[in-house]
Length: 235
Ligand SMILES: O=P(O)(O)O[C@H]1O[C@H](CO)[C@@H](O)[C@H]1O
Ligand SMILES: O=c1cc[nH]c(=O)[nH]1
Image (cartoon, rainbow, N blue to C red):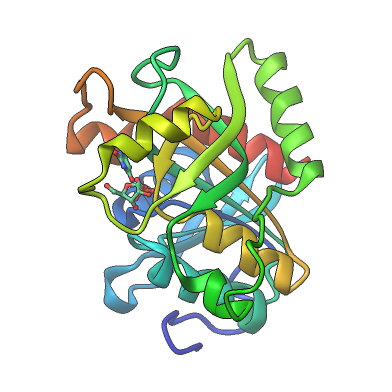
């Protein structure tokens, strides 16, 4: 096993879906994968491997925030040979044109995290971006299924509860669609270790209107996003 994942070599597929919520990982495995088997319960951060349309796929919870997601992305790639990761998360909409339950594909991720500033000695504002091939496939898959998916930049924030909502408005002025808490780290680590990564999100709450989904919905719905992610990662 690696430090935080209780799997043997070969237990984890090269293709991984990565929700923050470990119970969403369980729901995805039980709902969408054939012959799903749980390979790790360490810290209750569940991981499962099964097949989707005949291809081995794993689903691994990553926890909330970039320090946690970084650990899982790093170990999946470096200790288990994972080649492609699609985050399937929830997000808060920053723009009025997005509605609750809309699906978003993150082309790039701004962040207020200090992790990349430390990585580049504070000298470079590194721009974490999605893998172009995965993004292009996801767009094609969504179109073929008649699912409207917004593609654009997002914010990966360290804090869920912000003291600076004015900055969300300013980011929206610059085209930033939504806020979540992991994508910048996922894109950076995938780039660093030559893996492919994409972040797909479902709008779980709306920063402008105050509308929100329930915890149960965030765990067990969002099927359209998961279907796009699975079809994309096996293509
Ligand atoms: O639903 P998940 O994938 O956890 O994603 C979002 O939800 C959590 C906050 O509620 C953060 O992890 C954020 O990125
Ligand atoms: O990080 C997140 C996730 C969902 N909704 C938010 O407002 N922020």
